[in-house]
Length: 167
Ligand code: HEC
Image (cartoon, rainbow, N blue to C red; front, side, top):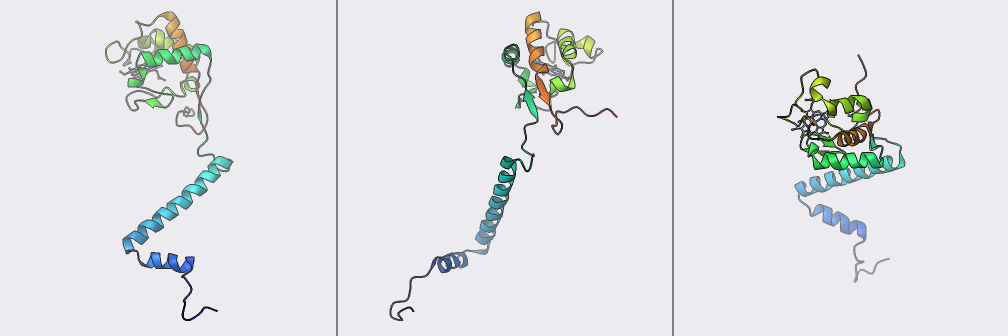
C-alpha cells in the first residue's frame, strides 16, 4: 500500500482524466468529433483495402497501347483538356467527359466524329471550327491515334461514365 507521506504518482488514467477535465466544452466537442471521424476513416480504409467494400474500386480504365499513347500526347498537345476531362484531368461541365468514351461509342463512331463532327452530329455540334476545332487541322494519322486513344477509355458498371441503359 502507498506510504501516506509519499503519495503515489498519478497513473495514466488519472492523468488523462485530469487533462480531459481541464478542457473547455468546445475543446472536448472538437476532440471527440475528430476522434469519431478518425475511427470511421480507419474502418472505411480497412474495408476498402481488404475489398469488403468496393467503393474505391477503379471503374474507369485505359487499355494502353503504343498507338493509344501517341493519341494521348496529341490530346494533351491540342488542349482537349481545356474543355474535356481526360484520364480524370481537365475541365468538366463544358464538354462531355472523354473517360469511358470507348464504352459509350464504337471506334468507327469516334473516328467518324473526328473526321466530320458536323455530319456525325447532324449539324448540331460545338466542334464547328469556332467554339472548338472541327479537327480539319489534324492529319488522318493523328485522328487515327486520337480515336484509338479515346476508344481505349473504358468504363465499368458503377462508373459515372458508364452508359445509361436503354429505356
Ligand atoms: C472549346 C471546348 C472544346 C475543346 C477544346 C475540345 N472539345 Fe471536344 N467537345 C466539346 C463539346 C462542347 C462537345 C459536345 C458535343 C458536340 O458539341 O458535338 C464535344 C464533344 C467531343 C466528342 C464527342 C463526345 C461524345 O461522346 O459525344 C469527342 C470525341 C471530342 N469532343 C473530342 C475532342 C478532342 C479529341 C479534342 C482535342 C483535339 C477536343 N474534343 C477539344 C468541346 C471541346
